[in-house]
Amino acid sequence: MPKAYEVIADDLRRSIRAGERGPGERLPSEADLAHHYRRSVPTVQNALRLLSDEGLIDRRHGLGTFVRRPRTPAVRDNRRHQWEKDRARRPLATRAETGATERDTGLRADDLVFHAEYREREASGELAEAFGVPEGTALLQRDFRTRHSAEPAPFSLVTSYLVRDMIAANPDLLDETKEPWPGGTQHQLHTVGIEVDRVEERFTARPPTPEEAAALDLPPGTSVILLRKTSYDTEGRVVDVSDVTLPGDRTELLFTTRLERW
Amino acid sequence: MPKAYEVIADDLRRSIRAGERGPGERLPSEADLAHHYRRSVPTVQNALRLLSDEGLIDRRHGLGTFVRRPRTPAVRDNRRHQWEKDRARRPLATRAETGATERDTGLRADDLVFHAEYREREASGELAEAFGVPEGTALLQRDFRTRHSAEPAPFSLVTSYLVRDMIAANPDLLDETKEPWPGGTQHQLHTVGIEVDRVEERFTARPPTPEEAAALDLPPGTSVILLRKTSYDTEGRVVDVSDVTLPGDRTELLFTTRLERW
DNA sequence: CTCTTCAAGACCTCTTGAGGAGTTGTAGCC
DNA sequence: GGCTACAACTCCTCAAGAGGTCTTGAAGAG
Image (cartoon, rainbow over all chains, first blue to last red; front, side):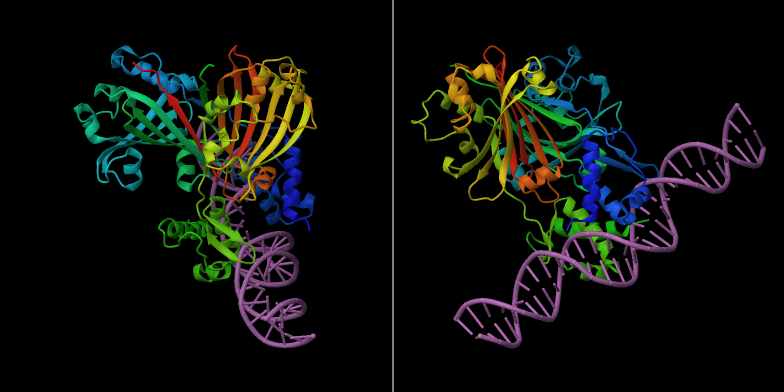
């Protein structure tokens, strides 16, 4: 037995996919749809919720229901790590040019806004294992979000960890009143003599929690990409662990693998 | 004014996150919850749908509502490309040992099941651009899905493209009655003298379409990861383009980037 | 001309009520 | 003992209706 709300959803979905209803176009009101399909308004709403959860439409209170416009994603390129490394040895003042983030997204450094928060904490189970250190080891934790100045919504939430003793040689890094990690993590690691050799990135995707949806300004019908980045130095030690949450509708990850020649 | 269904959802979400309701545990019935929160059953259902869409619970018809158990993901490692390359030159018969896919997931080759379908088609806009060839160029298209024999659901949907003229030197590859691409794409490219030099992979994530949800057996509250893989040979030509759809709740991607030494 | 007010139209929430359909365990029949 | 039928409990669908909030544009006041 065909379910009424699925019949309606299937019909609307087909018309959107076929391009009969273009991006940004308004759908008939719920009342009109109810009349057209000879169903109650709640049943129509049920169908619309389905399409909204699929990311096909936007329902705007007081305005109407619209076909969603696809977004053009910002690219996060794994070559950023090499770029950042190349930049890390240069002194802070002389390298206003290009950094890793700007290279990917095409945004200038000026257009990037950061909000940072700074804490000191002890490594607990999961993190201790990630760093390969005993539980209770002192870590530095930094929470921040990157945002493009033209857009209101942030495009990443980041929590980054370092082992305190590893970077204690540079007291600036422990001063909470200063900008934390100025110049990027690789630059700061360089100031204490650490060279990053290899970066491992693991990621999965899932629907956002309500907190993530609010922080990243995600509409229904989108996903988040969860990225765990682990940096190793030339001796194989873990020197940085970062958890990044990215908006699935605005992010594309680009990874290049070079193969050895025959 | 707090919305009733959000109040209920928040309360249940908190209790699940806090571990008061463990994985697999059954929640009270909709009727019981309605009575407890002094709300109607549809309002409770509204709250449950929210949690279901977040991937926190499973609603099973006739049985009840249960806290979802987290799944342990299969890992897809980008070193697979190097492994596959190493294997590509060996003759088919003498390399029953390990292949790329088995290395990641820990599954033996015997446990992997493929369903393949074979077509010939002309390159249209998007694909022609991806390959850097004129529109209308003849392509070979293969659709298949990989599945683990122990699990009923497939763990990837793949559509792979090759340029017909590029591989015409090996007539086996054009024979639709034979197993398409036996031994893997890199092996087959090797039989016509093509060496893969570099692999580019682009990822995004979004909620599944109904078709994807059915094919991958995805419950509500999960995402799909979309992968566009492009392989380049040593002369910079695009030799293979593959689109892969992966279930977000069962997939973890691992990517290692090696940096140049100072 | 500008600002404020208001009404219309849109989506949103919640209720009550009635069935429908999947699952399981039990009582009863053979 | 084994099979069958049924009852109880579950979630699922749909309807009709009342009231709410949000947005926009038009009418009216200044």
